Structure formats: C-alpha cells, structure tokens
Length: 311
Length: 269
Picture 1 (tube, rainbow over the protein chains, first blue to last red):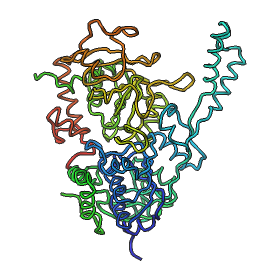
Picture 2 (cartoon, rainbow over the protein chains, first blue to last red):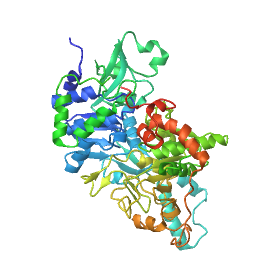
Picture 3 (cartoon, rainbow over the protein chains, first blue to last red):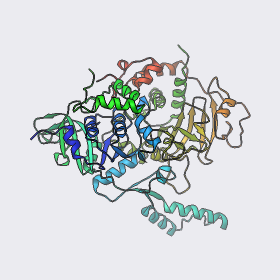
Picture 4 (tube, one colour):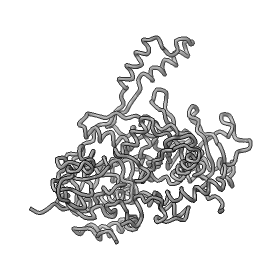
C-alpha cells in the first residue's frame, strides 16, 4: 500500500464535485493538491471559498484552477491576489461569461457553513436586505422573524401602540411602520455541505489526527464536508490527544478522509505563514494572457511535484 | 520634519473620525485606515484610554480564537464600534459596489467581491467609507451593483451604517435620515469646484441640508509635528509588519523594520 500523494487525493475528487477551500491568511492553501487536480484534468468543480480567496497564495491557487478549466462555478465573498491586485484568470473568466459566480458576503458563508457543520436546515443572518447579493441568490430566502413578531404582539396587547394619539392619516403611516417593525425581515441561508473539504495543515499524527492550531475554519469545514482531504508538512509520532494544548487545535482523525504528507504543499506559502510574493508576481504577470498562463502551467503543474519555494 | 504626505493627512482624518471609539476593525486592503486606526490607538493611549484594534490579515492584530466568523459574531453583538469600507463605485446614497460595473453577472469590469460589507454595513455603528480616486467614475449617481446599501427602510434591523466618506480631495459626512452626503472639509491644495467637478452625485455644502455650498468651505486639518512623529514612528513600524508594500512606499520601511513580525511577510519563504 503506497502512501497517499496529491495525485491519489485528486483522483478521489470526481468532476462536478463541490469543494471548499480556505482564505489563505494561514498556511491552509492546498496548492500541491490543486496542481494535481489540474494534472488530472478535473472539470466542472463547484468551489466555495471560506469565505474568500483573496490572499496571494489562496487567490493564486483558485485562479490556477479556474484558468485550467477545472471550475464551473465559484461561491465567494472575494477573489484577488491581495496587495498585488486582481486574480487575472478569474477576472478574465467572469468577463468571458465562462465562470458562474455566486457572490456572497463573508458572514453568510460562515453562517451557511455552521448550519452545514451542525446538520441544521438553515441559518438566519442579519444584514443582506436591499443588496444585489440577495437579489441574485434565489437559494436565499427572507422570512419574518417569528420571535420578533411575538414580542411586538405582546407590546400591542399592553396598550403601547404607536400612533394611538395622533391623527388618522399620520396614525396609518405609523401603523405601516409598526407593521414593518413587527415583521422584522431576516434572511435565511441553506446549509453548506460540500462533497469535499481540501486544505493544507502543519502536521498529522500517527493516528491521522490533523493539527490546525487556533484556526477553527478548517475544523468547521471538516465537520461540514462529506470527505476531508488534507495535505500536511509532516507526520509526527504519537497522538495530539496526549497533550491538552495540542488537542485544542486538532481535528480528530474520524473527520479526516485522507492525509498526504507533502512538505511545501502550500507553496508559495511556507508553513510558518510567509509568502514568496515574487512567485505570485511572476504568476500574475504570466497569467494576464492565455499564452502566458499556458506556459506557466506547463512549467509548474504538469510535473508530479511542483518546484519547492525558492530559498 | 518633512511635510505631511497625502497618506498621512488621510490617516490623521481617520484617527479623528475614530474619536471615542473603543473597538475598531480594519478589513482587507485598507492600509490607510489601518494607519489611521493605529494612530487613533496611540492618541487614545496618550489620554489613558484603550482602543482595541483588529487588523484582518495580521496575526499580531487579530486576537481571535474562533475562526474567521469571530469578527462577524462580535460585530453582530455590537462589540465592534467602527469599520472601514470602500467601493469600486460609491453613490450619493452611500450604496457601495465591490463587485463590478456593467450588467451583472458577466460584468465587463469585475472586482474582487463584497467581502463582509453586506453584513458589517448593517451592524457596525460607525462605518467610514474611503476612496482614494475621487472621480465621476468612482463617486457615481447610482452604483451598478449594491454590495451593501447606505440606508435601509424602517423595520430593517440596522444599528449600523456609514458616517463619513473620505477621499483624496475631501471629507463628506453622511446624514442617514436624509440619505445624503454633506461636504465637511476640502483637503489643502484642492477646491470646492474641483470636488464638484469630480463627484457624480449631488451633495450638500458644509451647512448641511439646503446649503448649496456657496459659502467658505473648511480646509481639512493637516497633522502637526506630534501626529507626524507618531505616524512615522510607532505607526510606521506596526504597518511594516501588516502592509509591507505600503510601509515601504509611504514610510520608507522594509519588513525588517517591523515592530512585530506578522504573516504574510515578503521573502519569509
């Protein structure tokens, strides 16, 4: 039995699967696995960013998947290369109409993910009313807050009725406002349960537990997804559960589908969170044109192991 | 001491807009608000007050242990007093567009996305809008896509919203009841005419409602030597760890000058 590699993990993700990826302010970017998906020729993926891919490495990874034709749709609150500017293949694909984007806002992604992780039918969220985000999301619903309505009714019953001492016309207007207040519209979001959560992490232990430190996003993603595929820098002996300090930042093996040991798997980040911005700049320059992107891909993706980060 | 750079002027105005705030968060790609919030923290410390500051993307300035949702959870509970938002387009009703221009979804110009705006604009009491390109293509009559609306009808739960719009030409205040901006001050070297010519929406003069702005317009206060010393000292060193490109350009500092190293740091690989 051979140990898992990025390519064996990529082989587990079928075309058309829904996949969550992370925002990349921590070294959670599964670049090696993404490049393996490119090599596999994955198609029709639905990528949900938790809640954005707008740091240099995360934006670059999603941009590569889009440019390589792996992605049919992205649900996101933001895609960019951070300080370096727009993600070129993402921007191009939107303009060309070849990529479907479900625009969201960060807390909506988190709320839906939490509902998914808990097995709940929906999540309510404040805000969003009056936005074009809501207008373009037929999967989101607006209901009246059932608890607020109850509160308003009991306020009316106590005789505290708005407009009771004003003229009829003004009273009607106030009555409408009071009715709106009583409605208290609130947005409901469907739960997010991706087929796969994919991310990089610092280390796994002998039992297959994965340590992510204080980052709860990867814990939540693993709880919400059908299968969680992880690349790690290293596998260490023993169990993280032997230490209370380590256990607090650990995803139990029961929530993990497979782990591949891939040192430098979050390139061009390093596992301490540093980023080789020159690599991202070079990518950004190349990916401005179809030809440049193809050349970049040929140099970096069509080999089983990507180039390690420059020293 | 070298005269104030424009970025230092804007950061100083941001610090003034944060007066009295106890908890402020700075979002993605917001180096000037970040510098302004750091300055506000220094000024608060001089008065013996504490300003809790969160800068997203900075490990040092993000004291969260419950994931990316924690900021939004805190904001929903009223625990974030101030935040900053920008827009590819901002209109006269303070609607902001972070998605793109033209007809959605295949927008000819596509920006990165709405980030937390569709929520934070509703729940954070003091939202400061900023835009460093004050022009008719950025400050428009009506945005092409509403990432977050400036105002909401009665009955919509809305403890938060915009209080001001700061640009490279001037400072506007926003009147939530009227859904309209009023000019507060024009930055040194610029004029009311220039602001009018560069703004795609109608706004009131400094007198507020009904003031067409015919009278004298205040000039934005330039930061004095004490503020500049704070900006170029402790603020600059913190900025070098969070926004290395900005710190190098504005303050001439490299990542090695950072007071506290924070990821991502260029060249750390």
